[in-house]
Amino acid sequence: MAASLTIPEPALGQVRLAAGALSRFGRIEGTLVDISGGGAGLVVGEYVPRWSPVILGVHRTAESETALVSAAAVVRRVRMLDRRPSYLIGLGFDGLDDRARGELESLLAEIDGVGALEGPA
Image 1 (tube, helix red, strand yellow):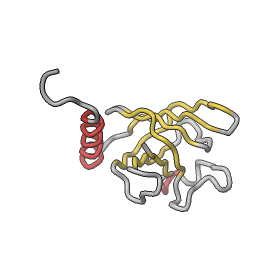
Image 2: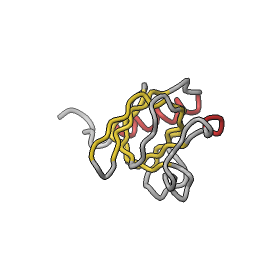
Image 3: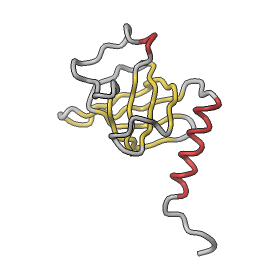
Image 4: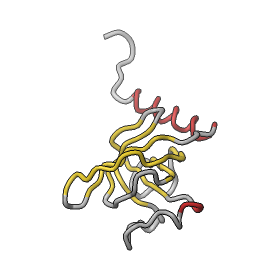
């Protein structure tokens, strides 16, 4: 599933990104590999420092401007995967508000329902 990271306005001066790191939507594009009520994991092509505040966006497609989920998070883990470069970013959600919690719960319910069988097996 497509995902993105946006650096919130107050943190722009604290987080340095490589030139050209942002897509035409003004965000770092990536692929969601894991998500739960506590955080998410995604693979991106740009290095994002640990402890950076970010806004995680989960999108139906990479070309979607609107997000299914938009939630404040903090980068907890960064691991280089290969020389492409490619990084596995581990996020912890940071003070989810009611709107973000609702979006997250809806997405998790949708994911849990994918491939689920109706009725007894």
